Image (cartoon, rainbow, N blue to C red; front, top):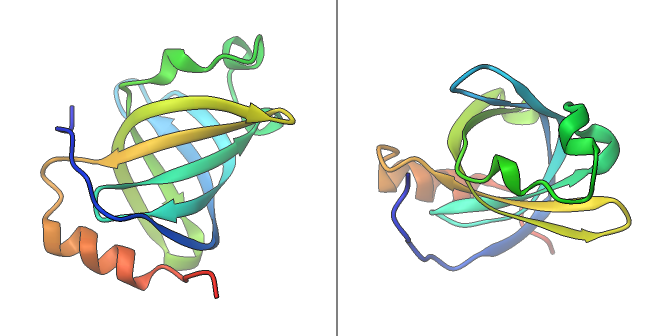
Length: 123
């Protein structure tokens, strides 16, 4: 799993992701979500309860069971698949979750910084 790293987070214009799966067993986790902030170490994904795939995850408001999973997700507007680890989960409100995803350790720093710089910033 990724080491604890810190980098300044940037609010970005919400960016859609389509499909997040567990890499270990290719199990779908969610169909849709929005990346709302990012840094060179990872990003925050907001997911609505209705977009969760598993009935186990939909069963209650706690999705802590996905913490630590290595995941892959797709950003259609950038035609980009990204992998990382789920570092934290939190029920926010109104049947919505905040999921923190850290980039993998083998993702080069310059690539992570370039990706962060390319994401659309909130004006």
